Length: 327
Image 1 (cartoon, rainbow, N blue to C red):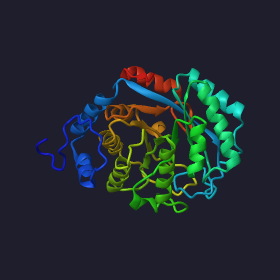
Image 2: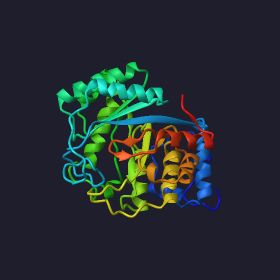
Image 3: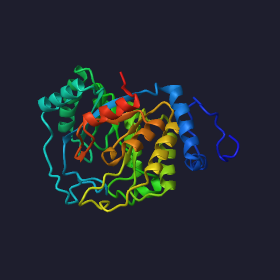
Image 4: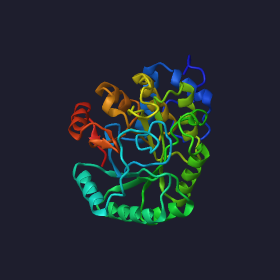
């Protein structure tokens, strides 16, 4: 469109690209908000029903005691956050939670364990959980830290649909947030998951003190993967007392909306999830995120260890916006 340098794609382009330049992404971020949302919404409508939102539930099946030093995470054993290490949840309790989530309208059930990487005996138990949740008619997703190729294959054999492993931020900013594993470690796990035939859930966290250029770098990395992640969670930092980022100033809400929109434009067929941080967002901010192309949320009272809006609040907002749970 004339007047907006650095952007030459057709308005509602449906072709998938894996060659996005940072210059192109900067140009998108710089667009007037109305133009950016219009482009994102146009692309969204080319691939999805704009009135539908996928509802997912996230359960912490093993909380606390993680040896990693992720600066945002209350489950790290290196910080005093009041989160205590617990054992892996028993199968029957996990299935009871999954059944309740299904009955409340959830379509995907996600299970998270605070590990650097799973031990084989623990992986066997997680595979049993995956098999049980699948029998309830739910899509399954787990996040267990780093995986080897054989571990990814074992999860695939159990019927796992999605594996979550976020890149968190740009390659340049990553070392200021995490030192206990490298960016390349994360990319290697994603490759193992993709090779095993499991769908990839991969996004990041904004509001950690990064610059817009880091948000550009994060999305460029995601959008230029050999295959786009089928699910892209965009998290707003939840500031937790005891973590190094506890006093980080909040990110401007409009900048967050811009990040959602650029993710939608660059990864047209992905589910873009409005993820952590919704508890501290206004309903107006969330509405703008849906307009910008977000079409997935976590519902339920908790995301691993941090608060999340109650189901009734989400249901009320969706009703007022005319949004329906995705079938």
